[in-house]
Image (cartoon, rainbow, N blue to C red; front, top):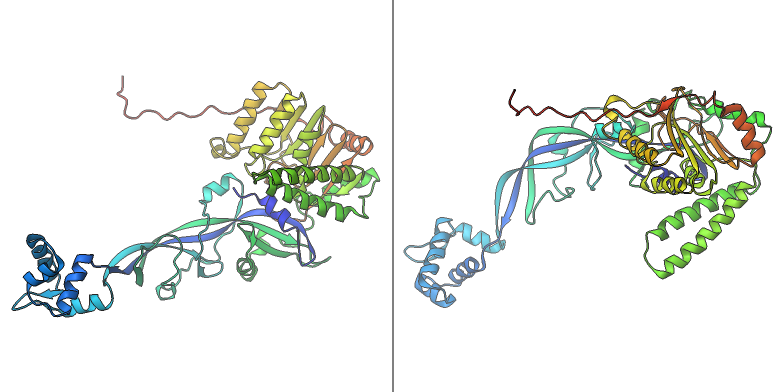
Length: 489
């Protein structure tokens, strides 16, 4: 699955407009298998070309041709006979080029026509063939990751005459092959391009600007096509955008604390924090002494920025910061970490976060992961179910790990708490995706720092009653298929 949180952080502003929400989506693609007429250039073997050129130069006797080229009599006779059978030469009364032989020499090869099945990716949003190589996913795979899939605006396929004959993506054609004409569409299959829907605030009372990023790059044709086909309301950009899924609930929990979010240099600090994190991620992929030195310097600078942010009692969070709160909590907590979330997904409970979790548990930190929703039956064997099994395995090793299901399955506010020092509260689950309403909505989130504000929130919203659970996770046993071939006893 794509690292959609990193993509959002990379594009946190556009033309001065701040990012106010993002979510992973699947853009529809029809994978077409098209029966086609293809021409292929057949290059002559060197010995065939030399024989034809000798005849073209005036040699008329088979024996003379064989002698000039220094070929064995039997081998030379077989090649000349083959050229005659393929209508390049006439043997009697003397050797002479036929029209096909003249043509193959003038074109340095011969073209043959044959049928071939070719795969094309048709984008129903932009009504065009995708000419670049893309990662395509099956619908069920995205469903397991709880990714919102966009329905094609139309099932109409292009006219065959409108399909491009050149610049086909991938290794569709061998050297020398060229598509002459498309004959028919043999079959089509619906696939999806993993992408990120990015929403930017254009001003109070104005509909957000929507952009789509593919492979980390904003794709303007797809973005414009989504708006053109009026798909944005179906994605959640409607009158409920600013009131959906906990937008107001988060503010209602934080405002009674009577501590307003900090301002002043906050924007500059958050911008610097993002730049440092992106820079660190890039340096960690390099293997050199110079990169290691720069990495240490940037990590030290990031630690300073983090300390400055911690001194602000309550500050607004940026949407992509929520998963990062988990990293911070697991690294900094000395006593306990509390995480309320939806079902974990691989894009957020990454191998790196699993490592941080393991390290925190080894330090003796008590970690509670409380999950609001439930796995569907088909999610136990794949997707979230696999992650739950990993967490369950850890819980059997570490008594200080508690993974449980919350009684409140309609939860729309989620927290990440480290000791009584910091607490993040937002309407975005830190380890999962929004499941109650998997639609776009305005993001609302705050980070509380210091015992006073953290304890005030904890006593109001993180009590045992508020965090009522139904017990530890119970993973169903794997279903074993019966051996149908075994004899009946």
